[in-house]
Image 1 (cartoon, rainbow, N blue to C red):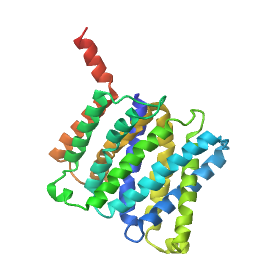
Image 2 (image 1 turned 90 degrees about the vertical axis):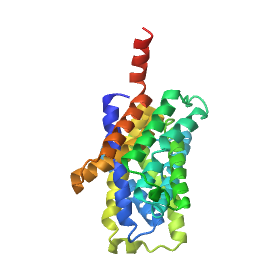
Image 3 (image 1 turned 30 degrees about the vertical axis):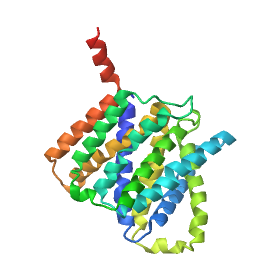
Image 4 (image 1 turned 180 degrees about the vertical axis):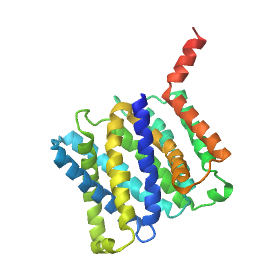
Length: 299
């Protein structure tokens, strides 16, 4: 991973980290399923307009269509619903920590993924991710009171993490000449198509969304935390593969920085310790420093 990849990863963490805030506001007046449907639907419309403006081609073969279908399920439909529902059952700090386990699931699943897209679960990747998760726990000040949340809510977030891990490995198989906007549009459009029959089946009144306080948070969630975020996501997955899921370790850092900048909060000792551990974990996963130290040690 080069410097630009790390910068993109941090920007993505800001956009995805903000999704938890948008969801919290939207949950006041909307159900989890409603939030998820309008999130993918509005994001798909936004990206479709973007693709039309850039005159991008949608020449997709059967293999790519199946990959985008799997991505729509494992990167949108399943985890979005699990997180939106799980977040209504547990505290935000616990949700962020459980979501930070995604890179660990990615390392494990990638180790058993069919070739040629299999990635070996190296010791430095496993150790780095575990250190990062511990850093997230310290950063957010996890206490025993926080753990005393809904077990079902916690399981939902963990299952979402597993789903994201699977989606990253499917995403690696997308051809390099496919524009990120096309990939994101295809995935979100298929997600909308999958969710639409469910919305119609439950008899949802689509006009209600216009007259509620959820409009602004759902727009923010759709455009910034979904459409724009996925443009960066598909750009990164071409260059760093499944390491894209390291973003879940950076998201709590982004949340802390946003709280300091926009809410006037101060940096506590736990923030410094947690930040140090997360960065240490990311450096170990990256591997370059470890390889350099080994070369110097055995030189």
